[in-house]
Length: 266
Length: 327
Image (cartoon, helix red, strand yellow):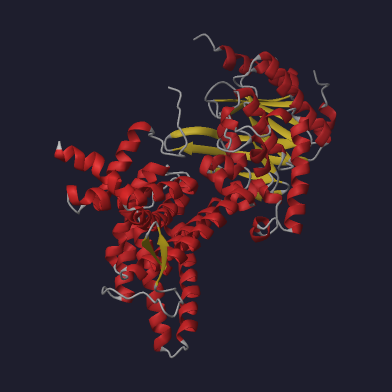
């Protein structure tokens, strides 16, 4: 359990704000006029039943989807839509619901790929394994090894990720996101398809990332229990609408949320 | 009986009795194979990074060679001398043109079609093919051209070796082409394995969305692979043009790359090399030893037969990734 840090959360500055965002695909409205914010240093959960628009929301934040309406303010800069490249450069990292790894590459190379934007040296020198380029490579490698130690995946460093069990793949994917030194980490269903032990490990990593590196985290989950334990504030979506927003306690006792999860008798 | 003897025994007896001819045939096979490998490499580069089978690869070879010869003639016409200065200037300018082409393809073809099904992108490369034919004919004319050999200081003549009591003669240009092709392949391999861009390229090949999420720019990667494929096309065009002449008929050599790709796998650089050599050597051996029996057209179809037989045993190719899907 995490002590509720309601007070700090309320005073902390807003890192990302979503205002009146609507997104539709043809006739299907995935998100309808949703607003919420993510404050610096908090763990923010986005929950809701299947098809509520959670992943779409993450894709909007990360620039994969461009909403038809609304504004996104990131680090005080307001825009109509994010772009994936700009999002990555601005320090937004993410994981995917159905693990999107570079399947042909080793765990180490996958995590190194997360450093792409931080590498500056010319490829020509990299090919020659020349002094400065080599020093740069070594420096990034050190950082990556730190992450590997942190996630306790030393033993699978050299293994091709496609051959790893699902739980470890999720861990490598988290490692790749961490390698970007993100300010905002978006986790799409980090616990999906995991057994109890793996869920506990993942929860511990999420809490540690938040407390050790001070990384702001937004995570998606449909499993109320785990998410409620982890997060500082929760926003609940249902059929693309926001139906509740507040601390886990507030949300748990909210009638609209209970109806959405249990269904209402008609 | 006699026919069986001729098919199954006689060729091997010949190989044993005159090994110098065998060595000569193997060498010619190797030379042809390296060329096939170069063409296949152009396909593999683009397929790996963007999942597009680039039908225009064959015409890019012709277009690169035509541009090179055309620019050389223009420079000579302006009185640039001596000839080798003109030739190397033309070469540098052609490389720039190929960069421009890569950029244009990314901007006008790939980018607007992002996230479309693969078949759409494949059809778009058909469009690109006919566009390049049109532009090539418009600018440089449709008549065949002679490759600039002397001014580029491509070696001529042959070296002869005494071996197994006979002679084997190697064309110097074949030796040079083989060395250059090997260097290009080695450079590409190091580039893919050791550099940030190489890692990004492999990443894009595996997952577009994951690559985007770590800040890899797909646009930049596409320009790079199309440029690399353009350079490979230029090398192929110069080499092939030196052998015969530069004309649009050259584009059919792209068809030679198909069996190589089937053999080597669409995603593997070493596969393209080894596949090319197997096809090249298989073709020459087949033509030399079995050709008289089966008719001389054997060279044009043997490659496909080798590839088909191969498909029966390894559908993913020599080095291709085995795709296992859960259903």
